[in-house]
Image (cartoon, rainbow, N blue to C red; front, side, top):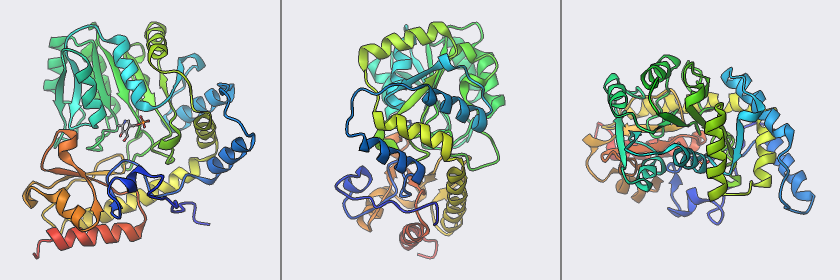
Length: 370
Ligand SMILES: Cc1ncc(COP(=O)(O)O)c(C=O)c1O
């Protein structure tokens, strides 16, 4: 059996399909591929217990996280550094809230809208780091601004949504060097950590020399294994002091962990490495295919090192690319949602048939021979 089965998603139960009824979903960051079988089987077994009482945070869950971090990211972490949280965004918000003192928060732009919005909850707002066209996570100039302003929090998205930029260890070390002696704590949203399409390896923030005790790294199996709906994530916080602040802030705002999420996480991390390799092969193929076809259009796309999201410069194609594609049954994301009007984001975590249909439609509308 092809391990990448296409999920039988319904409009009734799926945001990706419900928001734009009848349209092919290339917008929200989840995929058409079904969750791997070992996870589905484990969830089915758990459902058969016939109850959803408060779950136990079993040691095997922590062990599976330690195993995943060691094997995928070469990061050996202690059991007590791990805090299980309801989802990635609640982890990032909690992280910022627990370290924030005053002044602006630094974050990248364009960015996932929920990360841009985090600044709004604090009086001082955000200072943005422009990563749109550079494919670097931050520039020397940005580091100089951080050094000057000594912010209480820097929020990173790595790999970045929507640009797909993957930060290298050297780049993260330059950030570590920059905040040495500052009050700054860096909160890193690494929801897309496992979707690495280039030659690089993902470098978790907390594994970087000099950032161990100045970091909150938020990870999740959600994007990797199509698990957003069971909502589970974890923060890795080596510093005892930061962890303590994080845990007490978390307790103020959210309690409870999804019982099925825990089962999914453990089985994903123990049994689904090979499935992920197959997924990555398919995504690399799709990315190349998309790139080749877009070369024949007025849309500009430079493939990135990570995520299944293509960040596309549509400025030469006119102002209503989103609406024109939707009118033809292709739902993409408008770059304005991420702070970059004129750009679009296209999710390519879909089977070949959908990729062909979507790119045929794009060529019809924006092909160079038009
Ligand atoms: C960078 C990033 N962080 C967080 C999330 C949301 O993750 P969760 O559902 O675990 O909060 C997304 C979803 O698209 C994302 O792209």
